[in-house]
Structures are given as structure tokens and as C-alpha cells.
Amino acid sequence: HYKIPDEKQVKEIEYLANNTVKMGKKSKIQFLPRNEAEERFGFRIYQGGAMPERELRIVELPNFDVEACGGTHVNNTKNIGEIMIIRVERVQDGIIRLIFTAGEATKKEKIKQKAILKGASKILGVSENNLLKETKGVFQRWKKLRKMIKGKEELFAKNLAKALERKFVNNVLIEKVEADIKELQEASKILSRDDRIIILLGMSQKEEIYIFASAGNLIDINVGGMVSRICQDLDGKGGGSKNLAQGVGYNKQKVDSVIREIKKELI
Image (tube, rainbow, N blue to C red; front, side, top):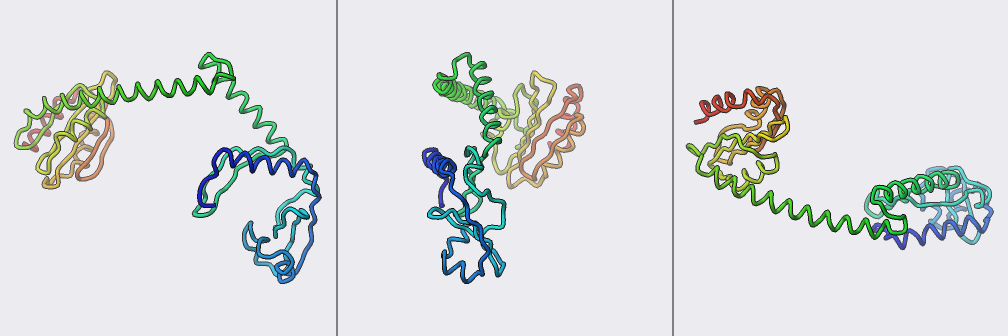
């Protein structure tokens, strides 16, 4: 299989499996020399993988399926119980794995899923019958809200960058601002140039101090090491590469002194 089966196909596979279980097909298990097994059944016996043995254990559901397999098998498909496919995943090119439950495990999985549905319905304040419709509505509202927030973040970053543009000294910018890490990243992206070094400290409403730094390709300074040092001075941790780094600190009382030291070093 070269693509993940869709929901309809998964349900068809599940139906076929359960229908076979209900039919009560008896399994036929025999040991055959490899040559004889291949002559009688063809190479489809290796659909579960190749077996190196000279004598093969052949498990057959007459007029339905056959395979060389050394695993555990029931004598009658009725003994398997209800099958429920709970997940499908791609293992590698051409190989798809179906994760499923059977028998008592299926009963437990149904109870678990019922509890999840009940809990979700309670959270959203709707009946289980209306859960899917309400979930779609919540998702659409969340997408709109996320888009609005992103727009405001971008506008804030543009305004912040505009204000910071005037504060460069010899292509070096070291400033503390009221912003979170995403806003620092966006502002830095707008201000960045190959001949600039930018170090921003975001003073959030929380206890954290966000540190974000970038250096252009023409700058011979490792901002990763510099940010690591700044974070240590502010009782935090951080680091990164030569051109890009970030971290977090917690000692707001030392921010001004740390900034003065960096400016002495770089400007």
C-alpha cells in the first residue's frame, strides 16, 4: 500500500475482518517443506514476511487466506471476538500498519472511548449526538481567533521594529522591551541585516525575561555563547548558534547592569 487508507477503507477492512470472525471459519495448520508449500499456495504465503526455515508452518483459512506463520492462531475465528481498528500508521514505503484490538481488549477500548465522548460533551455542554457539530464550530472559532492574534502580533512587531530602528549604534542594538519571545523574534527578523547584531531582552508580565539575539553573516561574534552568558548572569539558561540564539532569565534586578556590560563590550 502506497498511501494511508482513508476512514471509509479502514471501516471496510474492519467489517471484512469482523464478518470473517462471525462466520466461524476453522483454521487448518500444517507443516510443509518450503518447495511444496510454495508450489501449492504460491508466494502469497510470505505476505507477513519471509521465513528462513526449510519446513514452514502453514496457517490456512480454507477458501479465504493462507500464510506461513510461526505465531499464535485460534482454531476457529469465532474465538477472536470483535475487532476494532484504532489507528493506522505508515511504517515505511509500501508498508502500512493497522493497530487494532480484539475480544476483551475491544470491550475495554469501547468503554474508554465512551468515557472520552462523555467527558468532551460535558466540557462543551452539548449532547454526544451534537458533539461533532459543536467541535467543528469551536475549531472554526479558534482558527479565527488565532488569525486575529497573529495579526496583532505582527502589527506589534512592526511597530516595535520601527521604534528600535532608531536605537542602533554602529549596527549594534541591545535593548530591553515589553514583549514576549515571539514578538522579539518577529521584530528581530524585520531589523536583521548581514552587518547587524541584535540582542533583545523581553520584559514580560511574568517572572521570565526572554532573551533573543541574531547576528548577520558579516558579524564575527558568536551570539550563541553571548546569550548563554547573559542567561547565566540572569539566573537562567539559553544558547544557540553563531547567528541565532535565545534563552530565558529570572533576575530582573540585574537586567540593566547586564545590558551596560554588553554595550561596553560591543559598542
